Length: 358
Image 1 (cartoon, rainbow, N blue to C red):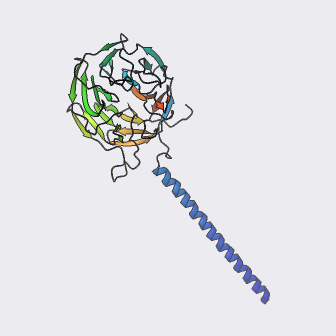
Image 2 (image 1 turned 120 degrees about the vertical axis):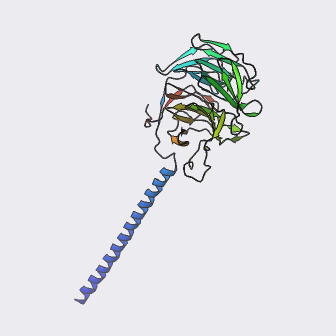
Image 3 (image 1 turned 180 degrees about the vertical axis):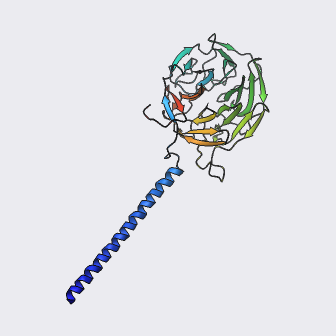
């Protein structure tokens, strides 16, 4: 009887120890699982590359000209125009028109000035305007008008105006074109308005931030915006808005993590040689370089003065591309990666879910 009691006691104690070990093991598993879930939750929230971003890129009909970088683009009504640039061996003078309704390209009259890259272009008062740039030997100052009705280029006799330069910013507000920043042997921040009705240049208040080249410019609700770019090897972080009614610049929030607030903790917008376009009152910056090529995309809301990451550019990572907005749609095309030149065109659909198959 005593032996049976001792056996039962030993057996009970062994079961108790085993049970307690199982409880400890189970608790360890639960704790480990919670730690893993916590890690992935925090990682996906803090790192925009792991967050499911909104926006879809759709490849359209390839640009029919020779693949190139540092081209020039502008839009007139619902047609986008792309030309000039560098194909890896030669500077180009050909120009092409893109019809988004037909998803097709048509070659138009060749640019009447010398072949060049890094020129500026804008559409205003139903005409296209292209000028400045670099022809391989000199910085250029000439300025040309394209008439889509007659498919002709004419030299614009507009004395004075901006100095010969390349890598400047250009956009139009209403029927007035604007050109500023760039490089003429020195980094620049001057700003000029061109009136097509009188073929005259008027110097305006200089850009509010630092001098720069290879920046981006865009227009929302009658206001111009300039940011990004490089100055003496430094990638610029300032962001300013231009109001033509008062000829004044207003500083907006910087495009990097500059505050103690959380809104800019993940900002990675700073770069040069990027593109910008506007869809539905929002601006988008894509591609470019900051020592390495960039494929992230950022959306700017002028109401909140905040940037949000969108789905990464789906084409090959690149710099020196061009972009245009037509018919409420935004397109990015051409550009280069090291010595490889591109001739593809991509449309961005900012509110669609990402679809890698289209």
